[in-house]
Length: 343
Ligand code: NAD
Ligand code: DAU
Image 1 (cartoon, rainbow, N blue to C red):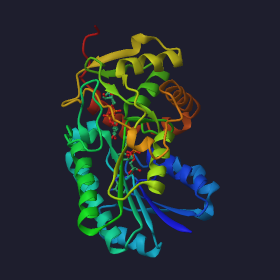
Image 2 (cartoon, rainbow, N blue to C red):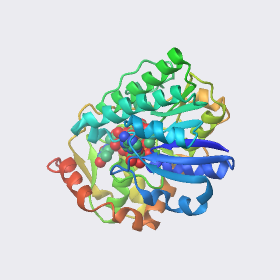
Image 3 (tube, rainbow, N blue to C red):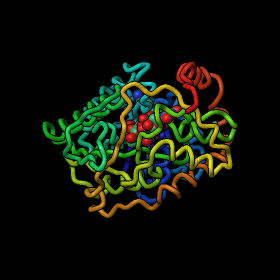
């Protein structure tokens, strides 16, 4: 049995990955280590704790807490660390950057220290295409490009990546990094654009569209991203970075049109709001390197968005209880007073 520590496994991508990993690797025991911030949700792992009871365990903890991290790795005899734990929302990083530095940079450092101390066989870092900054069409960011993070979130993720590469070069920690594009799918907290738009549309509420809505993102299905991560954990070369993205970009305004079409709601729900400060115009990655490892996306954009809409329609039990209390306060702070006159 391999004891695999999945940090941030109670979040959106982490929980989808844990489900995939337990199905794919009968010789893995997965230990989820998660601080359960507002974005960490035991409901995301509910089915897993039943289906894989003998090969799955959960430990509550902070990756920036050295004692807790060293403790779990030692007591569980961990051989692999897969780090999803992060503060992840760009808009929140503009409100409160400090926590992003604590988790995404310092927390990554603590995990790397543990990997070094306990001679971990593989440390895999989940990173993002946002570290490259935006890129004008028809360009695509490649793994060798310079880092140009625009927000405190992307700058913190870039800091985490650089720390990983430094621990590989200086101390020989067997690190791999994947840089994924925007994920969509089940269990995404309704602060990111797709679940905000879907859940608002279901309730006939406005869809807040930043700026002119012409920003481009590569919206890939979360299971395709998880597949890429798993391939790199298994077959990636230590010291290497791999972009994971479908290679297809969609403008936010077209994304909103498609969500409303799928839900049978009026396009008039789209409401322009003032733009995000420092908003990156376009992300697009070159995915040649991960394709050479045998990866390819299984879902088109159309399939990904349709499956995502279907999931939110069928799982109101999951998101309705999130969209209360603290969430509503965040929503007011984030969107209040930003509406622009309709064009
Ligand atoms: P998420 O916000 O849904 O989940 C993050 C998880 O990390 C939560 O369970 C949270 O409780 C946990 N966490 C936060 N701080 C922690 C800490 N200090 N110690 C332990 N656990 C902590 O995030 P996500 O969208 O699933 O993203 C997961 C990873 O993938 C992140 O590293 C993110 O940067 C990266 N990523 C995300 C996307 C995307 O589109 N969502 C794309 C590319 C890369
Ligand atoms: O590119 C990968 C990144 O994708 C991940 O590293 C981040 O963790 C993840 O949050 C995501 O970042 P984005 O900033 O691209 O995602 P977000 O869903 O916040 O926004 C997507 C686009 O939609 C972006 O151009 C801003 C716009 N937007 C967003 C929100 C929340 C809106 O127009 N309205 C909104 O209400």
